[in-house]
Length: 220
Image (cartoon, rainbow, N blue to C red; front, side):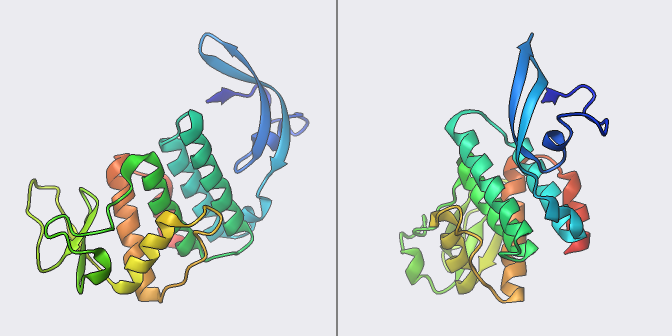
């Protein structure tokens, strides 16, 4: 959090660099654990996101999620890289808002330490590729055979079916370079299924309500 005195004035030199969605180089003054903005250089403003209500809602949701899990160090750099690629994809219409939302949620969960287990069933050891009917355990984050079933360890356990198309998309979202994760296509029903899964999976980890999510859902 940075204090930016006078930045709302139209004549403020730091106005553009401190606006919503702005990606800027900032010179900060630190004192007693607080930061004050002194100088800035705007690198990218993603202005086109303001021209469409759905893109705007998506951008707000992505930023709120990134803010909720923000950390320093290399992990923080990876989250920032994911956010910038997602905003770019939304601005340039590289993928639909629902695809960008879904990809961002699943990759973000992996970046903050909750990468799901998709390689094999932990109950019988069968490789995921050989499973006929796949289920995903949202609380613990693993894929398992529907025939094996998953034991109920607590009241928070919830299982959802995963179609072959969604399984392929989930693998793509985890292993592809960050600038390629939005390049996948699903039928609308499958995309809606996957979007619900990634949303619930991530929000279980973030453990807070995203105020911008309701706004986004009304726009999609």
